[in-house]
Image (tube, rainbow, N blue to C red; front, side, top):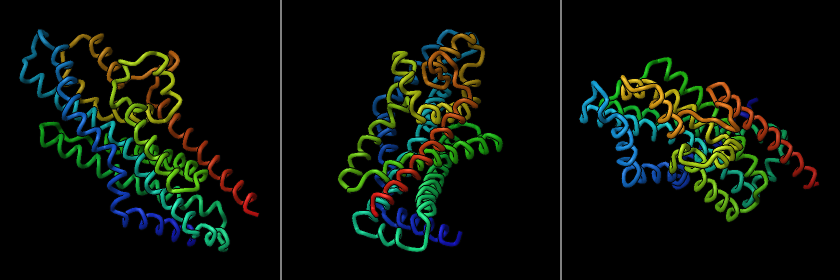
Length: 303
């Protein structure tokens, strides 16, 4: 246990000491924020105000303010799983450096099991992702409260924390598997580029899920990204949706929730909170087992 804790602490320190790694792990988040500010925010706000226009008891200025808060919260909910992915990926760059610089052989020849080494890498990536995601929630909520949103309840914060833990574990396990089969920094950089590009699409950030074809929506269901994003949206947007669409027909609210990926169905089945959480954890457990097997295979190959 002591060896596991020391290795985990070492990997966490390696990540946070590397300011470049921390910055680039947040680059996808910055890209999403810029896209929202320059291109997508006004379009999404206008969509909401257009739906509410003419409804009794609604005024344009109030609707626009509520719509802006809703879109900001929608964006924030998408940033959290993106950060979980990218921080886990950047944190596990330490494996690649250990391989290329020969330190991994020293670890493998030390009196420490490979399972312990594997778990230390995954745990370090998970803890790093949790720290960054919690800070993301704090910063996002602080800005939203400053803009006029009510502070989220304690129960909601606990749900968000639980979802952060689940997503961070899953993406750490997935990224460990990727790192286990990659053996050069150039290849790892390519993996990072591909993953960084895909996360915004797979999470339904760049394009709302409702604007995609049924085939693409079902394909997204083959990754944990969409399930994680849907969970955060369901929890973080509940009160804002109620406030924004007060007095609106249920059908209108339902259409908006489906269009913006707050509700999601895969192969004709609704993905509720239980389904989403189960899917995220199942991906994590599967890739953790695969990662351990990949490490065990490399041990046999090294003999």
